Length: 478
Image (cartoon, rainbow, N blue to C red; front, top):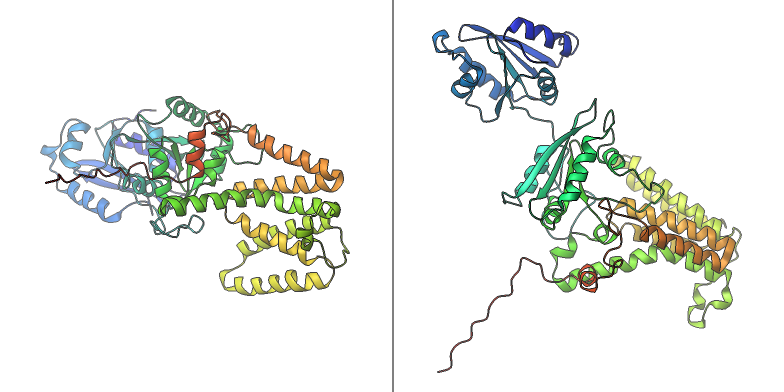
């Protein structure tokens, strides 16, 4: 619906649509502008009061004989604020208003003046709790979309950096920003993501990025390995953009979605690049080894406990020393679920009570559980290592994927012995091999298809690409 040039008609429509008589935060203010009636609509709490007050004061000084004929001329003469616009579509004006953008209606003009002087409640830019680094920047994404894009712009001062905004959700109308480098991005993937977001049929993105991820890539839900990489660090997002990836930022979410992402991308961390190449390579290889230990340590130990004759003499100490009252498979499975229960309890425990909870959990699950006969000390040791090793992964989704695969291998090993261990390992490998990124490429590239040069870059941290080798000038011999 288009605006009318009669103020009363427009006000009747917006009063019926916005219902300011019921919604206390929808505010309208009738003013006089150059001898004409006008009305300003804004949302309380979303507007910079001082900026709006100055604009209203400037409108009061306009004389009737100075009023231009068209809204465009009025905007050029009497709207000195930087972020202004003209709009004649009522639905667009309602959406912008509910997003925090005030607009001005003046009798005789069939277009509204949008004044983007909004401000959102936001927390300070601080280091994220999950993606911490030993060295590097200490800022992180927040829940405000504009702040997050500004953190990326601060790092990439190139006009080829594009940030397109798309709206999704019939009720929420959530803003989604696509950030990419023109000339480096895969244009086919970019157009595919845009098309999928625009065609999303959802009432609201209640869970922010997770809701969007399930909408744009709904296939193979049964494969637990993550299809997306999430990061709360703007330096990681900026580096990914420069590598040709696409960053998806959803309003109200303090993290960025990196597309496309393979298993090697998800394992990477910012610390790999904040240290010299040798240290970065060590960190990366250590994380890769821990990846496999997390998956195979307890199943391998269970297999050896079921076949003690396979244990060499130099590994004889791994055998259970005390009597086994509960089968090892049940001990391992109980601990798998008990550790998740402790993790959930830690998340929901007030910070002032975390220390008592840790002490109680350590005493009960550590000493008393072994003395009571429920668990053996060897089982507790290996599960403690697996639990700590899980925290070496920055991706929660990858940690739970390894957990699900580990439980499957444990159960199959218990019932089918060696063949169960082999079948569980094959299932885990197939979940990796058959998984695909959102672009349809291999999830374990450069292993499949094999590219040795690319694989070397994934495993070993070389010199940063932007550091050029200095030229050494030789002095002439006399």
